Image (tube, rainbow, N blue to C red):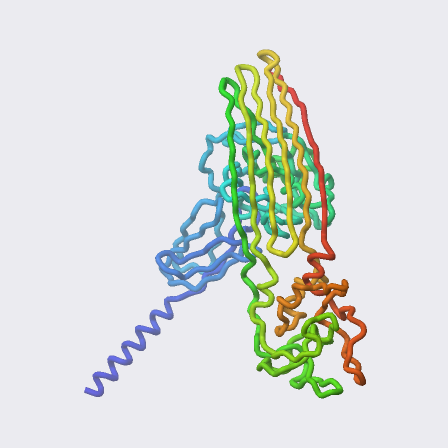
Length: 498
């Protein structure tokens, strides 16, 4: 019986070894058929299993699969492809862009509409409804994830968004440029035309365009696509087409839309709540023996926050009701989250359109009011747009497009030297935000949390200037970041039909 069990165990061992022996590593590179460039972010899955990986920034992948497995390659904007392994160790794949909707009409260079199937280059369109369903305020930032091969970096497409950097895959330059040309209703607009308070950026343009006015956004990817724009379009073109009226419609159409949304800050980095301010495990003491928080250390590697009564920063201000008092040295686990508020976005838009056999018009007015998640931040935006068209005769049509945008914003401070950028690393876990929020006393003195050490003889502090960075509420209300832009643009064009 024992010999029989031994033989069975050996057989099971060899079966398991055989299964593992049938596993092999498959590597390869994924490229694009149209331009031969490598394709990052492609999903590579073993068919019928949850085993998978993705290609890296150079289009390479590596995966352990069975010898008889089938690999499935998929990516947004490209046709799904299956490759049997059949014992191969290297499988290079060429992906073809998804050609669904070949009969669609798209807007190309100079605002000319053409059948997609007649184009000799790659283009992808995003319908205007995609920008109004979620009421995203930054048009260009909201392209992220909607167009294959387009990378949007920098500030997110949120309501208070700032600089946006856009690059089309496979287009680069030694100088670090490579951003596409922006064309609104056939009018080329270079990046330099939009220098705001933070410098020239796409974020300004993205917020100056009313999402409710967008008919479509076309991204022209190939070098041939931008031939009509010369060197300005060498890195690709983003075509934005706005809505117009409808000829032959006798009745005037009035459309009214209102959107209200709220937002909260989230995805905070986890932090420890065991040790408080300081760099040693013991408290310094005043001449009277009272222990006090390490005011001059903006880190939390100090004593345990076990409720020991100590003097906090606010207790050294003679103007404070708690002057001279001891309070528990306890953790404030939500002090970073408590700084942020619930933001809201209220958007109202009205458009009036109509026309007859020879004319069409569309007038739109938009009002947007945004309160940010950081205290005392807001964005007020107003847009007025007018599109008209007139058939002078059977061969000549005159079009006009006029847009006005005003942005009045008080945005969050930017850069690593600003307080909120220091919250995780250079802050104290024992700080009570409710104390900091009342940042100014009745006599005008500002309250800060990082101060010079008290006098070794009197135990008092006479210089209340912050050592490192200001009270974040002081930054929010006294050191504001304001910008205001008024942008007016218009174009009159004629179309001749020979």
